[in-house]
Amino acid sequence: MAFDPIQEDCLRLILQSMRREGIFPLDDASFIEHGMEQFRTDPSKLITCDADRSFHLMAKATEILDYRLPFLTDEVQVDRQEMQAENYLREAVDLDASNWDARRMLAALDSPTNDAYVSYLLDNREAVERDLLATVDAANDAYSREYASDLARRPLLRWFAATASRAVIAGQYRLALQTVEESLAFAPADPAGIRHTGMLALAKLEASHQDIKQYRARHAISYGTAGPLRRRHHMTEKSLDAWTLLAELSVFYRSFDYTSADRTLHQLMRAYPNAAEPLLYQAEFPDGLFCRVNVVPGSQDELILAISEATPLLQEGLGTPDNACFAAWIANHRFIKSALEDHAPRTPGRAGLTGSGGDN
Image (cartoon, rainbow, N blue to C red; front, side):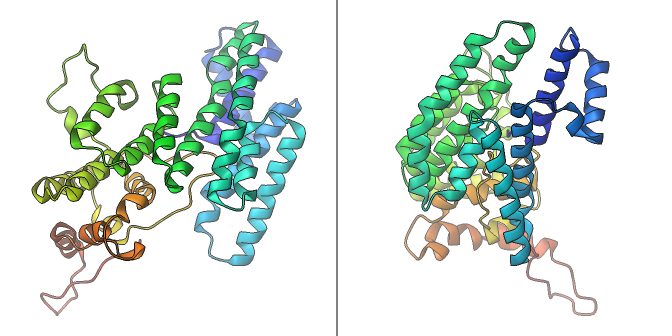
């Protein structure tokens, strides 16, 4: 559902090592395992050109910005780490001007507003596409063709994903949905997970329940579900993800269909064990700068991430943004209260009293 920058860095370096040593076939398991061990031990031994060094620096910056910084509490440490990551990105661009991931991440850090960042992404998309086309056209051996068929395409996919997610934040829902459709046409399997952003944009455009079902059917490959020529298994419905369920919940709530809304909330809580606290607190986290952060599918981390991305949905309705009707309806729902009561630790010697939540 997301790109792992360290894994991608490793794959790129191993492929380059195969090229240098003339290793074929490209799925040589023993050579790949040896390369992975080298990468774990000392990746600098695999880096032989500026482009490799550039991507490696960008991956190190991603580790800091997307996976370390959001959890730091010391402001001095935050500033120091952010400066280090920014230096990595600037050096990466200096080494390889075609490192569009690094350029995009720098733009995200430097842009004064979200709207300015969206404008940057729109203005430079054609340049990213031209560079990819040039790479594909220049592929004249097994190694470059392998690179062009997958790894070279990923920066454009991340460009699409960033454009769509930031367009949702900017309230440009039609732009977000259009970008999602273009990305899924380019890569139907959707390794970036951009379909989830499209689901949120669809809900913000006041889609119906049928619209959501049609969206999932249209992009059956990305959802890994049965296509139009294959029968849908009766258990398929249980695999709905958090983004789809939150969008459906929004649709039913908005149309005052509280029976269906209750059923969908119950389905969400069954799909993600221990969902009550995330649904109560509805914490917001910064968007990943490289791409959506890498979480385990079906995990509580995935639910927390989906809830954070669904903030524009949760803020619908009357009330202040931090106490919007839809957000408050979920947080105060009897399902949430009951689940919290069931899981709260009992105080010894004081039967009937329970704790009041967790530390999420």
